[in-house]
Length: 457
Ligand code: GAL
Image (cartoon, rainbow, N blue to C red; front, side):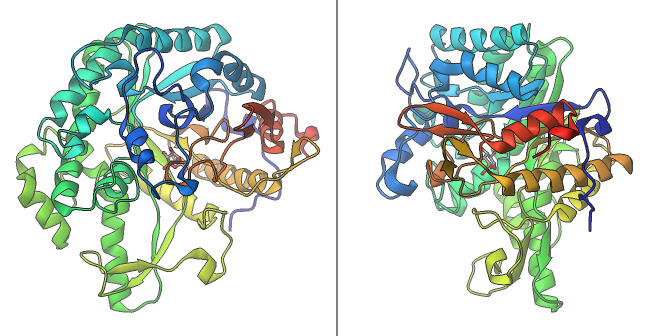
C-alpha cells in the first residue's frame, strides 16, 4: 500500500513538473448556437429522450464561452500553470468541412491570448468527443472519409493557433468514445453496431497518428501527445475462464490504441474481436501509418475493473463485478478508488520502449458534494487527490518519466450521459446562476501548489 499519511507537496515533484487543470469544449463552453457554431453530436444526442440523465442538455453548460476570462483567473488563483482545453470542431468548421467560422477562430484566439497573458501554458486537445453533427450524418467515425475530415480540422487548428500554442493532444480517449458511442450506445452518437465500431476504432487509430504528423509539420517547436484511458483489469477469481476474459478486457482497455501508435500494430492475441478488426479494416496494411513518434503519452486512469466470465455477453464474455458489490472504496460514480493500481499502470505504460514521456492528462473524482453555508467541504476528493498524487510521486521517484499531472476538472460541468449530476470540479457551479464557488479541494490544491503545508485543512 502506498503511504500517503505523510503529506507531500508539489515541490517534491521538481521545479519543471507541469501542474495543470483540464476542461473540454462540449462539457464547458455552452453557447451552442452562438456566433455561427454548428451542432455537435452531443447537441443532437441530448435532444433524444432518455439519453442523458434528467434529459438535461449541454447547450449552456458552464457558459465558459462568455465567462472564460473570469474562469482563467480562477485557474490562476488556484495556482495551476497549465490549462488544457479542447477545440469544438463545429465551432471552427460548422459543417465539419468547408467554410471556416471566423468567429469561432476568434474565440479560441482570445482564449489562447488570455492564457498567455496570465502566464498559463495552453495545452490544446483537438478531439474531445464532439464531432460535428453534419459529419455524423455521413457516418461519423465509421466513415472512410473520416481521415480526410479530421485532417482538415487539424490543419485549420494548427495553422490558426500553432504560432502561440506548442502543446497538443491529438485525441482524448479513443477507446472511450468509440466503444460508448458506436458499440454500447451510451454516448453520442448512440450507435450499437459492430459494423460501425470496427471501422471507428481503425479510423481513430489512424487519425491519432495522422493528426500528429500534421501538427508536427505545421507547428514549429511542437510538443505532441495523445491521451489514453487505462484501467487495470483484475480477474474475479483464479479460474482459467476469469483469467482469460480479464486478458481480453485488458487488450481492449489498455492496449488497443497505444500499441498501434507505437508501431506495434493492433494486439494480436487470439481474440476474436482483434481478428475481426484486422480483417474488417485490412489493418495489417496500415501498421506504419498508425505509428507516430509522440513526444508524450497522456494517461487517464479513473478506475481498475474486476471482471468475471459471463457467456451471455457477446464477444468479450465478461461482466464487471462492481466495486460496491465487492465492498471496496469507490467514488459516487461507482468507480473503485485504488491508488496502488494507478501506480502500477504508470509503471506499465512507462515500460513501453517507445514511450518517451508520460503526462497524467486527467485525474479526478465525482463525489456528491454538498454546499453548506456557501462552502463545499469535499474532504473525500481531497483524500482522493492525496492518495493518487502520492502514488504518482512514488512512481516518479522510481524512475517513471512522468512530466505532469492535470486535475479533472476545473469546475462542475456537463458530465456526458450523467448530465449535470456528476460533479468532478474543484469549483462548484450553480447551473441556474452560473455562480462559481471554490470547493475545499480547490483551496487544498492552491495550498499544495504553493507548497504551504501548514495551510492544509
Ligand atoms: C474522461 C473524459 C472526461 C471526463 C472524465 C470523467 O474519460 O475524458 O471528459 O468526463 O472522464 O468522467
